[in-house]
Amino acid sequence: DAGVTQSPTHLIKTRGQQVTLRCSPKSGHDTVSWYQQALGQGPQFIFQYYEEEERQRGNFPDRFSGHQFPNYSSELNVNALLLGDSALYLCASNQQGDTDTQYFGPGTRLTVL
Amino acid sequence: GDSVTQMEGPVTLSEEAFLTINCTYTATGYPSLFWYVQYPGEGLQLLLKATKADDKGSNKGFEATYRKETTSFHLEKGSVQVSDSAVYFCALTGSSNTGKLIFGQGTTLQVKP
Image (cartoon, rainbow over all chains, first blue to last red; front, side, top):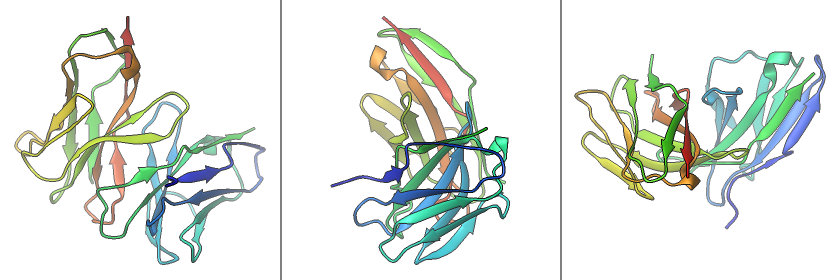
């Protein structure tokens, strides 16, 4: 049983560019959440998707957007990249109604130059 | 709003020493509490959890008790090993009940042989 998978593992972009990160949830999970983890900090909640809709959003600008597909996989898009967007982006999944059991993927390390 | 405060690190211990990492929280309602561990270059792994007051979560020799009266969830282990070296995050589910996790800033543990 595959856990949460994310791609790519690492990514280097320049300021102003756009990036798309991908996440496949653990088998049987239908809810996906995205987190940003800056170096030396705890993860910060970006948003959560369920039934292909954004269910809740953290304190992130509109440059951060997402999508969930019918197979429950999800994408995180960031436009107009800033140096401060450099971070580890983590995806977590759970079954709707079982919010106490979330599994995290290995993350995508984004570097903005 | 809801928040988590962890003791600052790094914490450096000798092998077989006793470990305590302090965690206190502020929350409305009755959150679930978690400890996650992050090994170098990896994502987050759930270490243990407690979903109501006075519950004790335990795993791999680690323990933490949900103390509502002191709003604390301190992590303890009786005898640490070199392999326990990692960053430990205390977290809670936010009051929205959607499973949004709010993390502390993390505590780095280094265990020396």
